[in-house]
Amino acid sequence: MYDYIIVGAGSAGCVLANRLSEDPSVRVLLLEAGGPDSNRQIHIPVAFSKLFQTGCDWAYYTEAESQLQDRKLYWPRGKVLGGSSSINAMIYIRGNARDYDGWSDLGNAGWSYADVLPYFKKSQNQERGPSEYHGAGGPLNVADLRCVNPLTQAFVEAAVEAGFARNPDFNGATQEGFGVYQVTQRNGQRCSAADAFLRPAMHRPNLKVLTGVHASGILFSNKRAVAVSFHQGEGSRQERAEREIIVCAGAIGSPQLLLLSGVGPVSQLRQFSIPLVLDLPGVGANLQDHPSVGLIYQCREPVSLLNAEKLPSTLRYLCFKNGPLTSNVGEGGGFVKISSKSPVPEIQFHFGPGYFKNHGLETINDHAYSFGPTLIHPHSRGTITLRSSNPLDSPRICANYFSDPHDLDVMVEGIKVSREIGKAPALAKYRERELFPGEDVQTADGFRNYAKTVTETLYHPVGTCKMGKDSRAVVDSELRVHGLDGLRVVDASIMPTVPGGNTNAPTIMVAEKAADLIRRGPAPIKQEEKILAAR
Ligand SMILES: Cc1cc2nc3c(=O)[nH]c(=O)nc-3n(C[C@H](O)[C@H](O)[C@H](O)COP(=O)(O)OP(=O)(O)OC[C@H]3O[C@@H](n4cnc5c(N)ncnc54)[C@H](O)[C@@H]3O)c2cc1C
Image 1 (cartoon, rainbow, N blue to C red):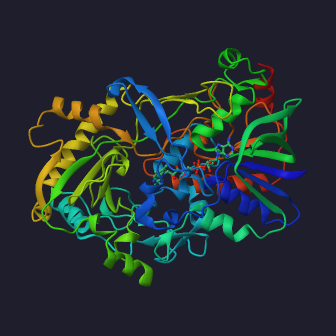
Image 2 (cartoon, rainbow, N blue to C red):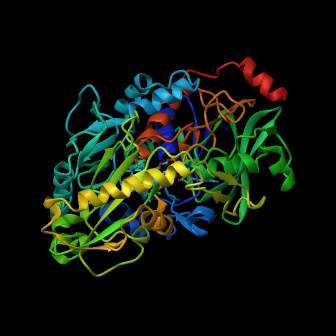
């Protein structure tokens, strides 16, 4: 018997395992479907795409995306201690202050920017030192890149030449402008949520971590979550939680687990003959993600990350933990407002000093650099639904990219801005020619077609168990599942809208805040939950 069972040792689950087990009087069980994070390539920053489609990756695919020429898009997600933070690109970005004020305006008390800033700071060890916006002494190390490629520096200069501001801190007073990203690294190595939060807590006698266990359902007694069932090797087991079960299985895994457990839209549960526990129509709805389009330039100088695995840079890494192997690939970027009326930037840029196509799965023996304009406030919404009642089957992912025409319009503008920056003088000495889409593509229609052909995920799915008060909300502002007792969801799936930026730091912030909410003790069942339960 444990007090808390946490399902999923990803960005959020590792934070909770640490914070809850700080109290020696509580017993915590952490369940993770993947294995330990012993693969060396997890820890060498530049190598993250080598983890794709390995045992560390759920390697999901979307259904055929109707606006993207019916392509089925590859969605990597971490299946290992640290979850997606063990295979991600390490960019440390929080999003825009207005994103969180927006969450609060939707009725989620306690989630405005002023409310969440202390949690961002609490989790953080900012190597530049503490400030109004940054914390020092926290578990998650936030560092400047040790080795910035000359192409990335030229990209930032080119953006300034094109008329954009320089921004040395996207997580400070203003988000707009261009610069080099800070990264979650320590001493030139990845600092995943497992490194930052789990490893320092693993020795605690009150925390038990099980890897290679696939949670298959939550068991209820009178609308109270009491146990988790899981597959382990060939067999299956259950463990009981005295206080709470906390689902941290991510934006795909969390709605899938709720649905398998009988919590979700009644019609879907009936279709798969899953006994109904609670009709919650919003489970798996409201899927939001950041689509991204790659523009690739052939580079005249032999300076790109093609050199990263050569002997001199390997020796530099082994001896000094420096050099191109410390690159996170997406080294530089920026935030741009497309419409002068928009209160927040709508496009985020990622710049990589390499040939980044098809998630880096294709290796091209040529020096190149790539731009990735990314739509960060999409209007389109997708879904996660069950494919079957077998917990080991992956669910159906319908991202529905560009189903709202606004999204493709903004993306086309993002491609045009990339072109402007790509032509600026600072990049001239490196630019041989534009490989993709190529100079022959010049019209808005050409850019639209190109976007449909090459758009991929920027890996930020959220929102599928959203927090809120409306009929599609799954959790309340304390992240308790509406209408049920002893059950919370804490991960990227609770975000009502996707933040305007990369989603690892926001997920860690969510878990830091949830830990405080949980440690306050079991809250009484609220009136609104009783009403929902009765529905
Ligand atoms: C390739 C890639 C690059 C990215 N780059 C960046 C970046 O540079 N910066 C950034 O901020 N964000 C980035 N992200 C996004 C960021 O990493 C995620 O938003 C964040 O890690 C999500 O955290 P989570 O806790 O919600 O889910 P996850 O970290 O995915 O954790 C979910 C965990 O639950 C486990 N799990 C799932 N189902 C079950 C089950 N049934 N039983 C047991 N365990 C289960 C999973 O194995 C996983 O460990 C990237 C993501 C990817 C995949």
